[in-house]
Image 1 (cartoon, helix red, strand yellow):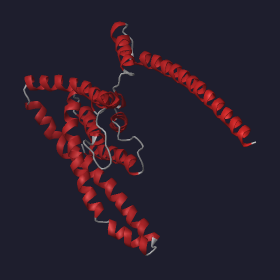
Image 2 (cartoon, helix red, strand yellow; image 1 turned 135 degrees about the vertical axis):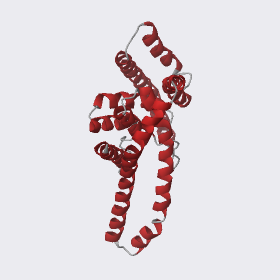
Image 3 (cartoon, helix red, strand yellow; image 1 turned 180 degrees about the vertical axis):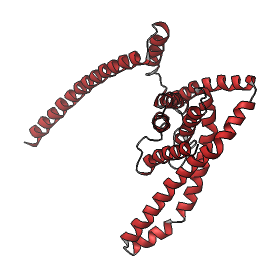
Image 4 (cartoon, helix red, strand yellow; image 1 turned 180 degrees about the horizontal axis):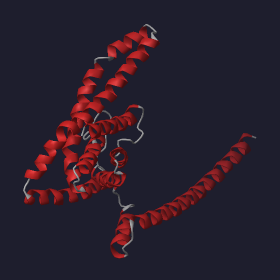
Length: 265
């Protein structure tokens, strides 16, 4: 258990390192689940859980300092509990959601501590003490990553047995209800994303993809290839229209220049 806790702590630290040094996408459920599965020795299950969670968190978008859910942390723990306890994907999704909410609280606590360092950073800049500035920055980085490592380590070391005991005492009726609800969450995630993307011009393409999958039993890979081909054709058509629009404008501009030269003479 200690080894698994260390590995999950490393997975959380790697996921958060991607956020610290730029938006590298390590916090996406697919990546976080794959890294967790790789460290725990079950890459396939980690990818499966991560893919399912990717659909759940499609509509979760962080804007500025607002982070509605820490889906990276939730994905690591969802994949970890699913692999360690041998639970299904639906159970991993059900466990991931509350943990993702807890992750926002931990992050807010770190921000409170980091905000207290602003005056010290400012002082070092005013004094042109770059070495002290870099040293304080490195300390902040180490604290940030170590904090998340501890969250992953403690969560697995102290929470695995508790989660296992909880799952054992939950009645079958409740467990089946959670399974059904977890199966609906990817649809909810897609619906939240569609609220942002939906418009009249994109509606026919949405129904085309739905028809290919439903009526012709097409796989996601086949739909992706068709979508790429359509996107290329639309892009080529749009480029042609733009060229046709630019040429008359250039002709009109040259005509105006000739008229101005005539009157100036």
